[in-house]
Amino acid sequence: MNALQKFHHFFNCCIGAWHTERTYHYLDRGEVERSRTDFTIRTLTPELKEKVLADNNYPNHGVDGFLGFHLAFETVSEKGEEAGQELNMLFVPRREGPRGLEGDYLRDRAYEEDRPIVASFRFDPGSLQLVMTTTYTRVVAVDTITLLNPRLRLRQILTYQRPPHGQPLEELLLVGFGVEQKLT
Image 1: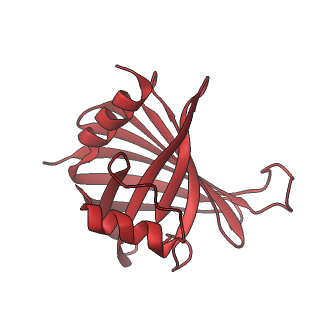
Image 2: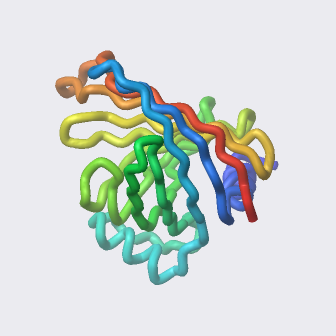
């Protein structure tokens, strides 16, 4: 399989219902939090893919080759706090390079800020690892999903203080880890 075929395989494995246990380390305040999340992923219709493009003022080149998904999740922290969200996302491959497939990752609703957002992704076809980097107003989130097998994923979430333009990511605020198991 080539990189694009492996990218499609990765997401075909991701469709369905999942359960995850996560641990978050808030380095800026010295706290550790555990949570569990149930989430579902389903494919988007061409109409919803076009809506995600329009919401982000992204040029529409036809959505047939773009992978689009609807994500819905419910999270309960160890303190009993509940949170949930639904959003639509679209992956637009732009180039294939030595580090794998790279492109834009669009959402109609961001996690950190309630607005449409365009981020970037990199997919390594050798390790079946997807890295999504989102620059928000105050932070930069680097979210990594590694598909170990069709029913098991590892998740890593790194959130950095947003540096001045052109400067490297240095000040790490949050580190999260999770094990995600497919239910259906």
